Image (cartoon, rainbow, N blue to C red; front, side, top):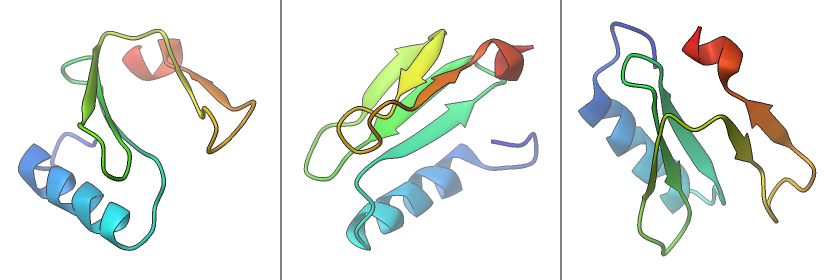
Length: 71
């Protein structure tokens, strides 16, 4: 999320991505140090100040460390 992005618009886009076949989406909000994790037919998972994200079974072996993003 860039400083000019609207969270509501980004959340709507994430829903559209899932509707179009995406299996995993990360909405990373550096201003609030928060991540919303989107998966089809599942509740949105919210992480407050996580240190890393995992690609799980969708992207096995992928780990995104958030220390650089949080600054």
